[in-house]
Length: 326
Image 1 (cartoon, rainbow, N blue to C red):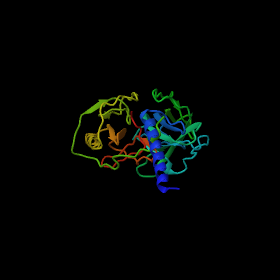
Image 2 (cartoon, rainbow, N blue to C red; image 1 turned 180 degrees about the vertical axis):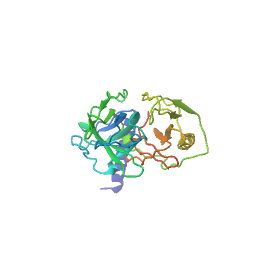
Image 3 (cartoon, rainbow, N blue to C red; image 1 turned 180 degrees about the horizontal axis):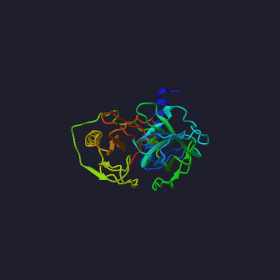
Image 4 (spheres, helix red, strand yellow; image 1 turned 60 degrees about the horizontal axis):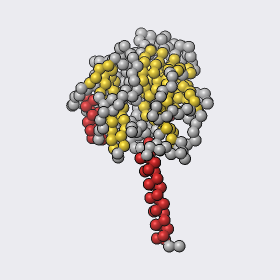
């Protein structure tokens, strides 16, 4: 057989497949031969009125708890008891750090893409709540399972489920965590995007205008400005606000540095939420950071999008799997 003919046939087949893929994405048609979904979970409230840890003792003698929430979306063993498939510390992502708070409202999210694998019937989010201890090891506050059926909603609706409580294992009547969720179909290309702006250092030389609100800390409302939030008078905010501008990678870096430089200081109880829209390779993506003055967190695990708190002066990064915005 003629090798040139084989090469030509192979090349032609590749071009046909490429054309089909391009047409599918440009026409916003979903791939029917695989399962591509995004699971989004938002935690809305933590209640620990007595200020206790898992064994019933108080977090601190003279102050309130210092909660840390570590989460993992489990679709491999959702029917198993805690911790299910999340068997190592690396399976969890830190999504909340707070100081001296027993009860707080929040809007902290964790997101996981399901990419061309068997469609699960149920999802369980594993949550480990810890009380931060500056001098000693952190104390276990509570373990939670937040379970729901795998029921996608149309992408154009983006509806959240009703808010419900997670299952607590140690102090179920005294420590409570509330959440809501949604599952939407995504394009296959959204599963395999790459990260931008990794390990960008903070800037301390520029300023920008901030918008002051009375919402709770760690609120990832979608906006192109820097939002300074107060810890007083917590209220819930809407989840979607239309974006008004696109930024190149360089512009996004400058916007982040500007927003960080104008953020909270150690003398305040405020925090800054940096939110920008990044355009690269003709794909527009949203990048969100929460930057309070006194807390820190580790970078996200690949595959999960989390809203992180970072200590002033730290280098920060984000997960490469970010939601694409049409």
